[in-house]
Image (cartoon, rainbow, N blue to C red):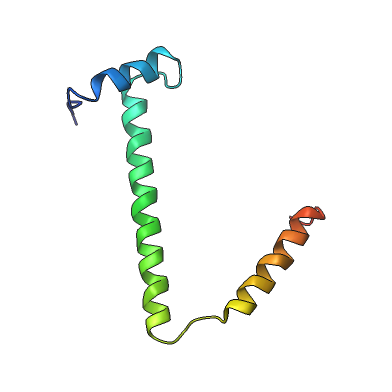
Length: 80
């Protein structure tokens, strides 16, 4: 599949390659698509969470904070 980089983005893409952050223009575009895919996945997960909350399937905030604090302690103690 051939694609054309919009003219206003060409300097940015060329700079990414010239600064050796990417090997070529194709790699820059692929990274952009991966980021877009990740954003779409995150959006779907957030929507799923809101749908669960709307359906009354939420977790009390105190439980969330307690579990987060426990997890942080585990990580800090090297149990990751």
